[in-house]
Each structure stands twice: as C-alpha cells, then as structure tokens.
Length: 162
Image (tube, rainbow, N blue to C red; front, side, top):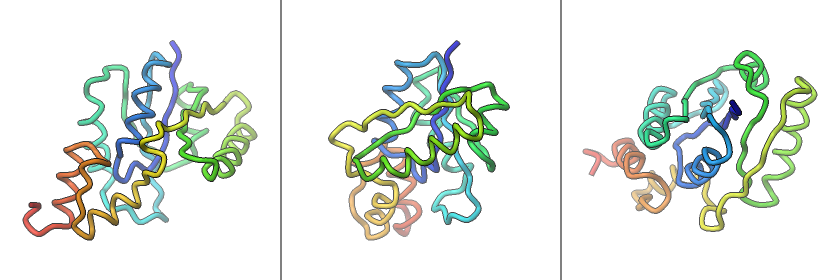
C-alpha cells in the first residue's frame, strides 16, 4: 500500500490545499494530512479547530487520515513507515525553500522523498495568511476556502459571526 504524507500548518485549509489533496488521493492508496504544530508560530485557529475543519472537508475521501505532530516530519514519517511527502508548489518562489527542505529531510532519512504537485493556476496566488487578512477586514473569503472554513473565519472576526 502506497501512503504519502501532506504536511502543513493549514491555518486555515484553503481551496489550494484541497486542490493538492484531491490530486494526491488519486496518486496514492492512502494520504495522511499532517498538521504540523509549531509553537513558535502564532496560529489563528487551535490545532483541534484546524483538525476539525480538515476532517470536515476531506470526509468524502475514506483514504485520507488526519494527524498532528510537534516534531520533525521525517521522525513522524519514519515512525509511521511513510516514505513520501506531498508538497504543493504555487510558483517558482516556493521552489527554493521547498527544495532545501526536501534535501534536508532526505539527509535526515535517506529513505524519505518528496513529490511536488503544482497548484492549479486558479490557486497560484492563494495563501492562508492572505485569507486570514481578508477575513480580518471583513472581506468575502468564500472564493478561497470551503464554506465551513469561511463560517469559522466569520466567527473569529465578525461579531456574531454574520
């Protein structure tokens, strides 16, 4: 059985993330969406809230599992016998950091590799941080995130969540 892990902070999950997930589930027997918890990074949503939103939007795919980690991706992967990571690339600007991360992970565990999927053109500009900023100023984020996530963003930023 071919399993891959798709790591990220997913704060919050966007339509760009879902685009990568949709394509990855066609490539692998099983996909673990791994919520990487970084205590040094200020998240809008708690790990539990992000996990719940991810679970809601991926419920149609029985081969998708959601998990969390506080540590290194390669440690999680080795412990769970997962040898491939899936990462999305939006533009050439993502490549340098992603390339460095992939080489570092491979140097930590030579049996671990990374597969890159180019985000569909319609989501190339999309970032979770941009979505949060739009929501904070009362903008409409419905074209950027699934409906359950848009509702959660309204709850965070709009009194009464309306």
